[in-house]
Image (cartoon, rainbow over all chains, first blue to last red; front, side, top):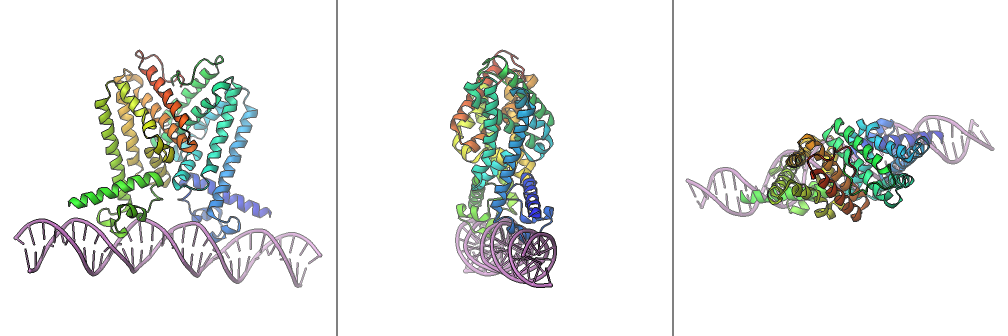
Length: 201
Length: 201
DNA sequence: CGATAGTTAGGACGTCTGTCCTAGTCATGC
DNA sequence: GCATGACTAGGACAGACGTCCTAACTATCG
């Protein structure tokens, strides 16, 4: 019972890490069992299939990010602070992103190519960020275009993550993050100073 | 000899398409032979290994994009026109990007996770775009920050492609493309009107 | 102690993969 | 008309994969 939970969680944790670093399809049961130190054929006492492990991993990521956003909701004094925390993921997790890309973006992309059933579930993590960001922009007084701004920021983060992984360029990431900070400031200065499609980077 | 070239090119073409839609690792020789109508074991008369097919596909993509950029260099009257052509890829290839993401970005990302030897080769396509864009921005009178602007635009395109694939939202893509057009205009208006880290989206 | 349920190890299975081999077809050039 | 080299079909091969099965171990509780 208790050790069940521990073993099960150990599998999920190892799978989460391996799926991130190697991709879902490219990660085998042998890879996971090497980490968890469990017999290969024994996964089926905890999960019915590999897909079920993927589901658990996605749910874990969903829960982890949810908890992170809730923490920011408490710690960040202003909505601007909170959005800044989101942007700063690119710095805080900079090393991993440089090596493996964005965990959400790369999984979403892989599952799309595999046409995997869990495609939609993986997208939920994106949606989580989207609605959270939207809420922050509303609190910033941008009710009218809050969703546009949220999607815009999400897209820019994804782009920076992808190019960070491709070019391995720390300096580029730092500059883009600075730009996003400046953009965020221009969003919150006054009530509606810049329409998103008029202001430059 | 002549039929050799045809068969070989047929393999490369089919592999290019399948690698894009399904991913490199997830595409098997059986998949390719179904399209090309060739015996499975017979690929080795044309390629020594699957990796060699990947090399050929990457070189094809490189050549295709190079040709495309050279065409724009002729057709586009101003550097601004040419950069606009780059941005408009997101519209012109909108349907495919929505379904399968960006061919360059997703391949780069997959090969990074596989730690594949051809990782660097795939990145060359990104570099091709980067240097071409940089040249256009220089021609636009932005010598000082041409590379920054090129990387910035590359990143934004990647981000939009990733989210287009995830959310399947045409309207979002259209809006982001419009924003990028506006941003481009602000880049070329005057000589150095906006530092990239000060202007909003 | 004995029984039961949860957990584990280890391996069998069928399938699919990339790779390689052999025999055969076809066209070109002497 | 025959030899040569390019090309192809079909299948063999070993290894890896996800899945499943069985036997053994462990702890709890009557």
